[in-house]
Length: 129
Image (cartoon, rainbow, N blue to C red; front, side, top):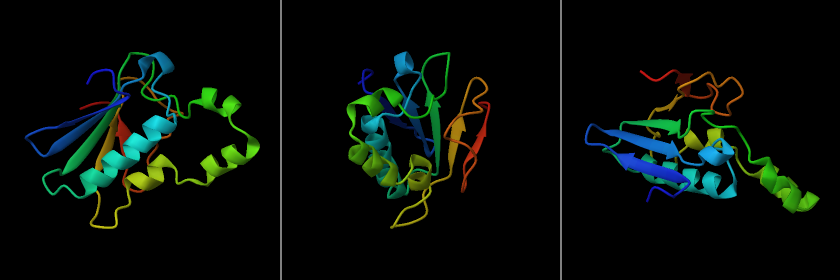
């Protein structure tokens, strides 16, 4: 489903590839994308066949812009506080109740200094190999 905002490909070589697919929004993380990523990482943490996860974004302008700030205007102050209370996506990626999550890498085709996928608890960022 190429129109989905997050795509998952499980390859035969024990690698799962997650593609952020919102190039028109510079792959900004909206509520739907954050929810899908949390579900995907929870599923991958239980899949013993997956040994590493690679994340990349579609388009040629940005790997991921960060939060989708267009959602902010529609929220009340209380709703925005509730969003801030949720775990950040980079906190969820490294945690799993069942076993250690597979190592994850972000693959950016250009510099991404402001990316939320900075090196934290097992994250390694850099240009694609």
